[in-house]
Length: 53
Image 1 (cartoon, rainbow, N blue to C red):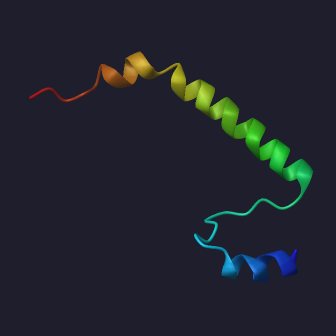
Image 2: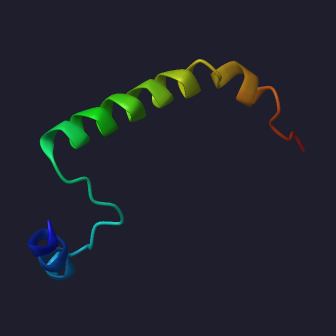
């Protein structure tokens, strides 16, 4: 892990966040996909609060 952290210094653009390990990555992606699905159900609600000039 330390080697990968050090190598990340030379990545352009540098990663804002790093997930190390296949299981950690799969879990992170699954969690983010669920959050996105939840947010997508709120499209109408979000639009209903738009400021109209």
